[in-house]
Image 1 (tube, rainbow, N blue to C red):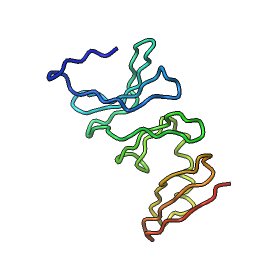
Image 2: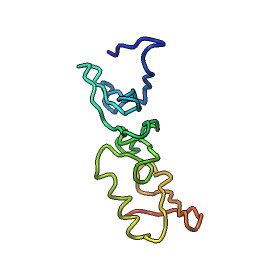
Image 3: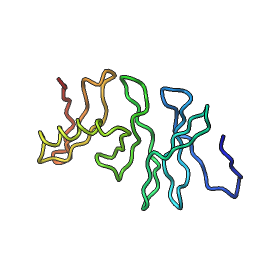
Image 4: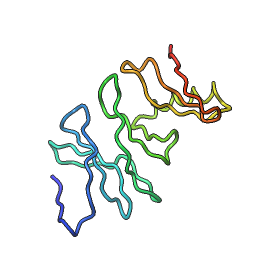
Length: 133
């Protein structure tokens, strides 16, 4: 799968599995910074998912509570502190920013069916509960 020599190679960190148990997410070095990769355990193919030239990728995977699949990774340098594998997942954040344009909006968590979220408004330091239509 992966060739790794202790004390010589830079560390490889397993982040988790996709809904498909043959897909593994991991971080390993891409140059001098850690990047996120996806590995197909059947074919042994590894593909780069997310990297940045100035910092390491080191957050935890984000899993959908609806379909149970990995949909992104927490990353403090990305918009909203999250890097989503699919750009469509940013659409809710963008809509929230339009409605609440005078605040810094942070989504803390979703209900299991993703119909309710906990939202933090940094300007008012207030935790509120919003129901999504």
